[in-house]
Length: 119
Image (tube, rainbow, N blue to C red; front, side):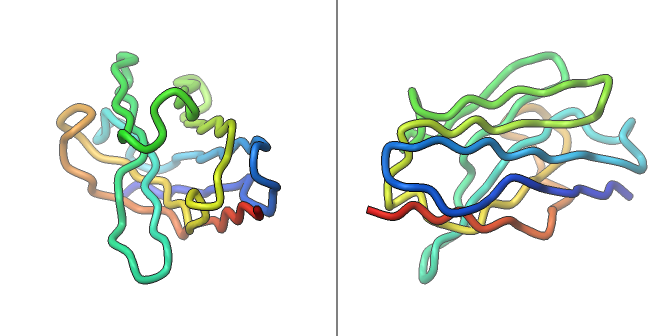
């Protein structure tokens, strides 16, 4: 099992920035990718960004050029730097982890952290 603990959500004005963090513990050897998904009220959960332990990345079209995902392998932690935030970025953001590369299987989820962007 892998446990994921997120931090860094909150309330920000449009155009502002936030950084999310997610620390993984447990059977780290079983995963090779970590990332973030989000779910807004009444909408499907969508994959926002993902990164492999080798540094390959994936970004959803709606966040390309504004969000940056990175990871510290020594700390088993992944970060999501969110810039130029828009009201439509408002959602619960979930850390995820799995294997099979950036578009591989998601096997574990964090508890979620709320991000609210005011206009």
